[in-house]
Image (cartoon, rainbow over all chains, first blue to last red; front, side, top):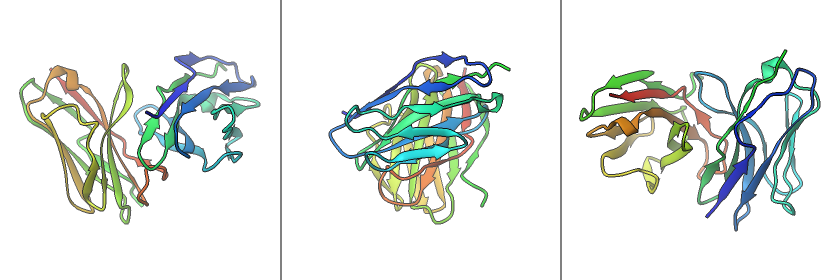
Length: 110
Length: 115
């Protein structure tokens, strides 16, 4: 079945550091790919998306490229800020399912 | 738009009691999802409705769980009888469209504690 695997646990960059949160997926279909962000006490909310291969999702300085050849959708940012601290979920959606990764907690040190 | 509205925000109950969680999706959205979030299992899809009809309930853990959507503006998730292992945050989400590849709008969740 479909699956999503992302960087486990917590990432602890300092403010101004660059960031990569890995996301890899498995599917036999042609999914759309998403990154959702969750702040304390709230539900996840869409952060960025890419609907097909070679699309790039962008939001608030974050980017993710839909790479079919490597089945990846890594989340990247050149310079993180303290306000970026949250839990980030990679997700895969297609006609049969919407799967979320386990989540990566990003804690940016001031 | 008020977004997806869930109630109650917090629920504490004793093992064996019936629990009912409520959800009002965004007006005009035709797909509704119930998710459960735990530290161990992350976000799990429990059931998915499209145009008020349950499409896939394969994620519902067992017969103690049931979900209904009597109309386009209301859904319930019921657990009867509840057990301590049901303790989790339950999210409702809605979207405009038929496929699960559409953008989901989540509610703020119901924190359920079963003692």
